[in-house]
Length: 199
Image (cartoon, rainbow, N blue to C red; front, side, top):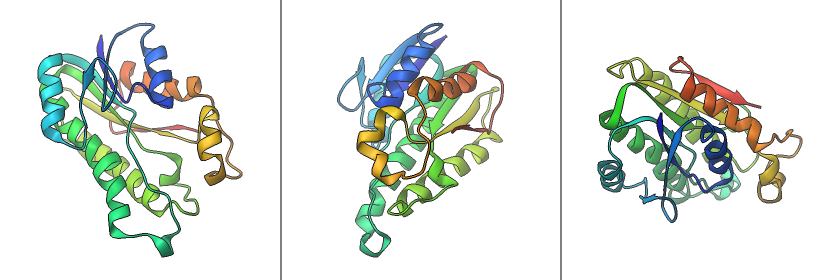
């Protein structure tokens, strides 16, 4: 299969590319790196990238920015970081991917453990990740041509503990390789409307 991975240079993305690359042709897309460039917060850039890539069998998104801060200090602009990037960026990809996926193809988005297990300073992250999962469940019942859509909900990765460990006190980190298996289940499996918990 031909699989597009958006955010392939990130911690999760690298593990996903390595695991899916064992069986599939991988096409990498990123805002600043990859075979194709696109800022997924701009649907026109997403569409331009897919016009160059052409028909594919699966699309994986392992990208998205979030802002972490105490709720008492949060501004609307800071909430929009996650809303515009991790939520609408992924929705943009899903909307465009419908047109370029072969029949029976799949879309896999990324949420996160805080959708169900909130943390301090993570009000935006919880809101955005829960919205991603809601979108996936709703989109799954409307996609045409046997297209599938799922989300992977990772916990904090072992490889990311230096950066995110202070936010996830008491959480058990998992290896990127283990998280990547959930993306494999989504791409190579048959389910739709699922949230695969990688924790």
